[in-house]
Length: 362
Image (tube, rainbow, N blue to C red; front, side, top):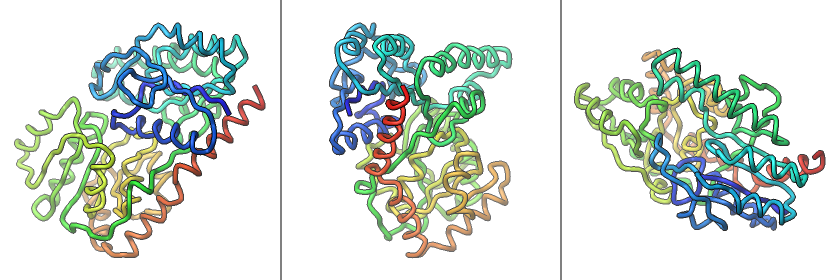
């Protein structure tokens, strides 16, 4: 299969979307498919470069401002079987979709950020918030949905599932189990969080929950973001003990922290999948997560005692104590077994099957 893959997320970025894209491209090629990648100019995986600038809302990612002339010319001149656009921001999506339609090449668009939830976290004024939600819906999502052959999202994507329902299909997600190796050597006092330090990740609530156990345990926060300094100040004001913050690390460097932790914790309610939880599980580390649609669907049945009500301190302590009282080989192996079912090779075969279905019905 001849695939054109267009994304603003690639290594050396260390966010979950970039990691997903790198794994998809690598495994598509291992499976024998031809993949041409358009991506940011500083990314080794990019076969062709898109002119990008720093994303003003998240400085560790970029936004393409490319004219897309060369990209559209490429689509007209090369007989691709399918085009996959990673969104958001993907401001180039609509012109690319139109050019692809002109030459009858099917387009798949996958959305990986819950933009409407982000609006709720970053905009306080209700009027502005409602205007932005309407703009995103009518001028970002709807044109993509009407133009592409298939819209995908990790698991159930809250934004577009809520608006467009069954028109949105699930994009399979995986884990590099070879990188995130299993370990039983745990520091029984260490709790780890990895991810952006940003309002939508519910970091302040995470710290409040840790405050309930901070005298006996250590919390390591690995990441960076727009509220780094505010979080450090919050820790001082609240007098929270035993918290350390490490700047964002590459996946290879993260592994040892996942392996060493006795618990991986998150308080985020805005995930579209939650790669960090799966990475922790692959290392044999139990996960502690708030009840929400995505986490309950992915992890609720296999780890039913590990979820908690985000607004209930007692329920958090129940789940926390349950995990800490079951720090044993059987628990660690169960975590690893769950992750092993989601290796990238199998997942990418499933995605190729989705592509083939789209091609057959174009």
